[in-house]
Image 1 (cartoon, rainbow, N blue to C red):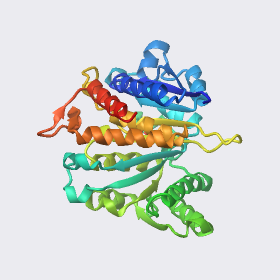
Image 2: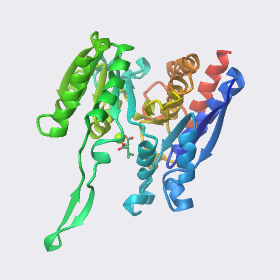
Image 3: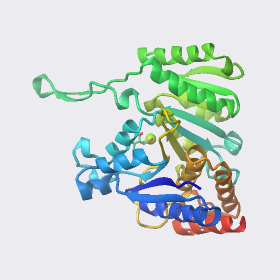
Length: 370
Ligand code: IPM
Ligand code: MG
């Protein structure tokens, strides 16, 4: 089997602890399913800043560009609060997204039946929930120019960011959402603020145009919702949604909200994908939706499941191992069914386990499948 390269960027906080569990899983697949996944590891975020004076070296960026998939755990923490803006750990993430052209960010929010009671919402609202947020990731206010902080008259200062989208950027991410809806429940909801922003109006018009112009999407039901209303609907009746497509900033916020519906941010993976190049290759990066959780770093209590499920997404979207991806998702469910819980999803009557015990339990389940 041809070798495939995976770059592991553990980053900061709980990053190294959860990445250690993914390494066990990758080793297992190499040994037992002969996947020939070659891993290498590099520094990113604050860890890279401490060592190299920059959150992302060019060498690591080039390596990421050349990989079949990048797995990134988390970056950032209070240790780097006073670092100059351009050197903050988060800049590494934003540069990787931009330079690798990872415009489509897929954030599934799935409620595991075993965790229904871990959510703050009533069980009937979230039981069976399975939605997918497609967030635009390389445009909008995150990257728009002009940006900066300027000194103006009377010692006053002005902070500037620009929310900007072209029709091409909107259409390509909408296409990803429509294509995914075809494989799911045939519903796309596009979120914008077309009542306030011109860029939001363009968003709505372009999504609608793409839909109207494409015969293959006729089976899909498209609706548009104002982003504030969608935020409200997500807690009122989240099961009305299937695929949600939205811009970079709204996607950032709505995906945290959607993630929490499911009980814990510690459960949810994400995939960031580029367009196909002329050889049909895509670039990709897989991350848990949660952050670096500095408050619990080093304690061995973090939940490694979002990171492990991010690897499951990589198996499916970048490495062409659908069956192995399904297997990994399956064993995670089994471990939860057995009542094992890390602290973030702990409930009365369940068995609390550490980060590495959770990883080991997943490996034990995999071993049962040989
Ligand atoms: C996310 C995070 C990032 C973002 C931060 C860490 C820069 O919140 O991936 O959702 O805002 O995109
Ligand atoms: Mg976020």
